[in-house]
Image (cartoon, rainbow over all chains, first blue to last red; front, side):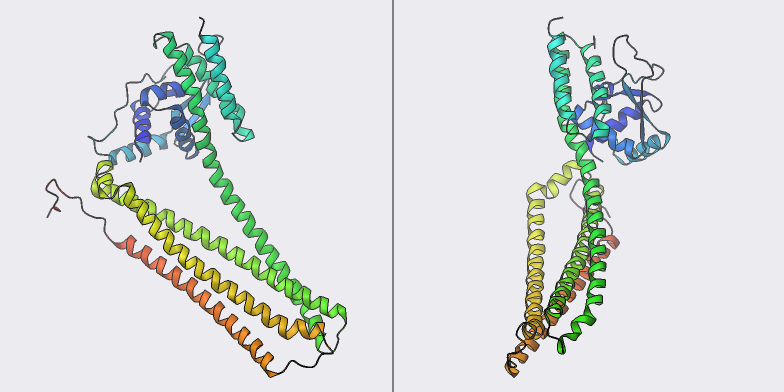
Length: 103
Length: 290
């Protein structure tokens, strides 16, 4: 498992039921956009992450955003993968808000 | 504010440019998603001063070029696999059709003994070409299959070794110390050189076989057809044709032996790697724990 993936999974696992926008994930996991989106696409392809469009934009006049969420299987796999990484070596994500509860 | 408009326009242009490389189906979805993020980045009041937001938005958009490259690489591998499968299917079908054609033509070609008409000569040529084309198609299918299998084993072995190294020596730092990029490059170069040498040898043997068979067939079938009134070229010519046939067969046997030996060696090495236990982690004194 690569460091960026580890950081992304740590961030997503910080709030397994939460919904995250790409920008929030970038900030929380400290990842560049060019790294984050291909990883999300791969995780989505493997069924570990799902994505949905906002039904209505949170802020008026702004286009609706897409948010990502860890699936049940994704959370299980992420926990299993992170358990193999030594605790000292584990990447610590920046405290991110997640969007649990907000739409 | 003054900078927001230009930043948004520049970032949108960068995203639009990056999205152009995406496949038709995913393009619009990605563009919408990234442009929506752009608006959110530019409105993020937590990032101050505003110029940082603008810079971040532009950086976000510029980074999507790399994202697109990686995203298309994922689909590119799949496309390559699909193209390989399609090529193999087409080549297999062509080989089957050509072999059937050759079988259908062969009775007419056997009339050559007592019929020297141009139609029979053309039929022999067609048979000859059909057989060679069918053999080429079969070789292509075999080559594609072998290349795919070797690639699969290679990737599997590499991933397994990578995992084992990480598990055995404690990850990133130790991995760099274990060999480093130079060592890996040297290993890969050595391996590629060895592989290329075998492949070169196999190609040379194959070409020799093709030349021998072509010469033999030309001497024994085509030449008598083209010049039926000429006297028989004599026993030496027949001997040479026989030698060509034997050499061709020997080359083909050697080629088959090379393929079987290579595959068996590869599988044996793979099995030996799979059954060998991973190296035990060393403690801080550099010794393996008892």
